[in-house]
Amino acid sequence: MSYEVILKKGEEKRILAGHPWVYANEVARIEGKDKNGSLATIRAFDGRYVGKGYINHASKILVRIFIRGNEEDGLALYHARIHAANSYRKSLGYDNCYRAVFAEADDLPALIVDKYGDYLSVQLLSLGVYLRKDLIVKALAEEFSPKGIWERSDVAVRKKEGLPEETGLLFGEVPDWVEIEENGLKMAVDLKNGQKTGYFLDQKENRAAVRRYARGEVLDCFCNSGGFSMNAALSATHVTALDASPFALENVKRNAMLNHFDNVETACGDAFELLRAYHAQKRSFDCVILDPPAFCKSAAEVQDALKGYLDINLLGFKLVSAGGFLISSSCSHFVTMAMFEKMLIEAARRAGRRAQCVEVRSQAPDHPALLSADETHYLKFFVLRVE
Image 1 (tube, one colour):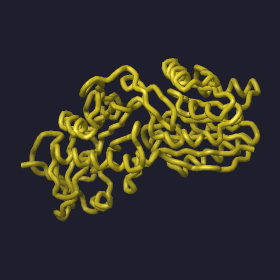
Image 2 (tube, rainbow, N blue to C red; image 1 turned 180 degrees about the vertical axis):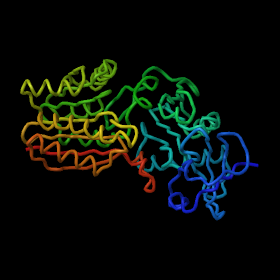
Image 3 (cartoon, rainbow, N blue to C red; image 1 turned 120 degrees about the vertical axis):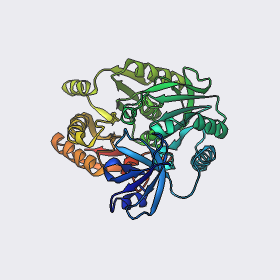
Image 4 (cartoon, rainbow, N blue to C red; image 1 turned 135 degrees about the vertical axis):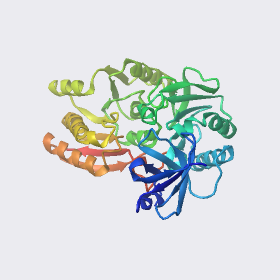
């Protein structure tokens, strides 16, 4: 008999509203017996059907629901879900590079699929999808006819599922560098070693938006492979791309050459230290871009994360010339939009700068946020004019 998970009284409300996760502490009892990672049926305390999802006894997220009706788990379901997700992106005009599947938001929990030209980069972040890797690869091959599929499941969250971090070839062949086109610019992406799945696709529209504000001298902090730097170089006089990783900065140089930019230079070092040094040298910039990695991975780390954001944004405010722009973002979903905005207000106050909020943006439309799941709405992006 397959697993039946009976929820405690009232715990079904959030899930019926659309949230896909069943936490272990919300469960009254589990009936039946099957393999870990198998499909389990979820019922309310009074026996009402709630949905089905893969169970993992090793995880605090006991079940990730992705079936709400009577659909059958298998290749046909995966193909239909992947096709629907991809068709949505194509309807928005995405073609060369985009997030084709965004996990819970596309009713495929813990599955990430990013398209880079003729290649796919995949993350399998739960036991359930990991056990169905071959099936998922088959469905992806049928939908995209890619030249290659590379797995990038080298993320810490896998440990919470009792899984090791893994990378490797899943289908076809994948070169060391894949050239994509984003916002009319060429970008070289390292699917095998680059951040996340190779590149940060969620900022693509925000990167295009900086062209309006990038003028004169631009400082792009935490630049990674230079997505913001390349877009800024189209309208700025000079761009300094700053990152602590020499590997990332070599990628910036590669991308500058691909686009024939001679107004981009790199600076290697800790952003906090270099910004303090620039301030001591009385340097200023017409536009400062702050796109740091997530400063917190759990709710317990939020206050420390806010201190980090406050510190770097305070430095950013001090370096922006009068009439220039501070562009600041956060990808920490535990830091809410309200928290981030409050932090920016405090940073401006401490810096003694008056700031106008010009734009507030979020993640690109190929990263849709599930309205019932705050976890899928994570990116905050502010454009501030500083006086």
